Image (cartoon, rainbow, N blue to C red; front, side, top):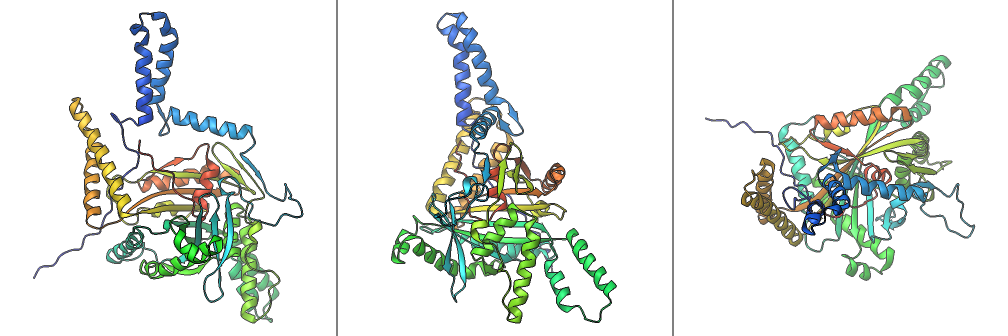
Length: 512
């Protein structure tokens, strides 16, 4: 009788979208290199060497722009980012003042007041069934509709490897089920954030259950401990945002009455259809956020100090509901007050309502095989507020076939060009070609293809702690073999992508 030892499953093979165009250069850098060579030989071609006084320095600059890298980015990328940011700064567009500082006229209706790329968002209300309202985020420019759920998951850190792999596979099945032709769901966003525990619920429980004959000294000591000791603990909040494209669902939206109301109804219908898939992935949907709950989620991201007050208000409202009384304040936040009072974007940080944030994008995932717990270091326990936002875009079978073949062709051309010119083919290019071939085989076998990226945001209320929080995050990422890149000159955009569950999309695919 023989026994077989089960192996712990590992994961690898993710592909970066940026493909080398020529000799490891992108199309833009190859064009700059060609221009540098042309500027170098032009004086000799026209037999006028004095022209080199102009063309040779230009050639030298183009060579630098093509080859020199600083912090993982080429000089031309830094130059474009710097110039764009300085233009916005000169125009004052890096600052935001809400209605408290820029009041509207009395005839204007209160609406969502958010800065930067969040300005086109509006929060609508839809019927989620049984009279429970659901908040729907409408992006007026992209014509997308997003619903956000507060979810709970059992985790994979303390379970055996078989159960762990099963949960990861179930999550993969959820994503694979969305890789269908004509699917109106174009984006799935998974946000998990680590926030300090307010202790409001525990304090409310103590207030409600303290005995009338308890000694005053004991009551005072307990209240003091609850108001200070709980701040050293933290809790995890997880959100799942589902985004629907109105263009793909044009027919059902028209049948549902058209407009935003029809789009919201179609989105709710798709959410109900996904219920079983979400449950099979071991995700427990606590509730689909209503407008006030969604506004509270946004507000606490912009103003962390408001979290304790809002938690106490929510605990009071819950206790009043249980007793059948009317709460003095309704739980949550009015959507008109969801944004910051003031915010300002700097080159390397984002200041908002008494807090400072820094956002990092995941530049590269582990190149070696990793276990299913690879992302755990990014949300390690710490004293600083931290969030990890994973953006996933399911691709239809036809789009997947087209993109995989483009990837495989580009990899084969890059290897072939090096082979024909007698260059040594780097091992990473060989490995990328093998991964493209494997990806093509898996697609042909019926597996789905998704685009994805991730952002990490750290937030502190004391600016002196900012660099310590960043260093702590980078150290945790290094432990997981994940390379992070600080989003210089785009911290306001990074905050929207890394700290908020609003269904903002991935950047457009870079093919060169």
